[in-house]
Image (cartoon, rainbow over all chains, first blue to last red; front, side, top):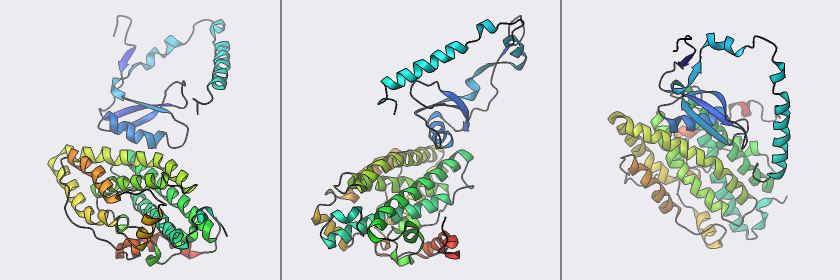
Amino acid sequence: MTAAGSWERRLDAPRDVWAVFLQSRTRDPHIHVGDVHAPDAEMALVVAKENYARRDPCVSLWVVRAGEIHATTADAAEMFDPALDKSYRFGGSYRKQQQVYRSAWRLSHRDEDQ
Amino acid sequence: MTGPLEAIADPDVHAAFREWLLRAADDELVIGHRHSEWTGFGPDIESDVALSSIAQDEIGHARAMYAHLVADADRDTDHLAFSRPASEYRHGIFVERENAGWEWSIARLALYERYDALRLRALGASNQEPVAGLARALLREERYHALFADTWLVRMCGGSPEGHARVQAAIDAAWPDALGLFERTDADERLLTSGVLPAGDPRKSWEAAVRPLLESCGLTVPSASAREGGRRGTHTPEFERLLAQMTEVRRSDPEARW
């Protein structure tokens, strides 16, 4: 909490809830795919594997206690909303660059990326 | 019809290897069915899903092994899985036992996976391609099965005196049947002298793998002796009930194609 008002909080989650992050391929980001209940990190990873990684590709999982995640509050959402036209900042071309980079990287790392 | 197992010229050794592979496939099918009975009844949704997934893995392994066996014999895998009398199944009695509480099923999983890993390693190191290659691939999944079992076993034993006592009782009850997995028949003698599979004492290797796990959980390794029969087709009423349920759909229309 600051003088500007409450915009930050810790997620309100029971201690046995773990957020699961899945990485589809090497060098992709880990993406939050859901939660599991577990008494500790090792059990969380063990059950996360079959609950979230049994269908689609996965090379790595992260788990973190959901209650350790700090987040912006719902009423902070308006801070993300631009007041004037800022389309000049849109990162579309950067995303294109990422695609180019990734496909080039794949071509040169085909064996590692299996 | 020729198949992938044809490479063994001596008909006696060939039959013995088929028998050995059939045991492995039947073990996987039957334990897979037992695991699947936990679907919807696990202690939490996470482990319910995980054990159900393990059940599917095991049945898939059985199917892959049956495929090698039927390629030799011109039958289909469903016939092997579902259309034999109980006395023609070659799994150990251990895997047909009814589930008796989560701790019992986890104890069985932990003991069985050690056994299965040793068996797949032996097959993977043999010269029996392509079945050897299949065994090496299956080991990747079995590693997770053992990890799941161990993770649960350690926590149940370390959680409370009651948990520890219940796991010990489960291990004690499981032990004679677990040793029964190593039952030997004439087929083993023929295989041993043929050199088809690597030499070794599977039971000794298994005990060497299981003992540290149990001791790290503070469990006493039982001293009871083996209860055998399964490898010769002598099963229990528990398997009669399992087989009746497992083949119910198949028997309703044996000619149906899926």
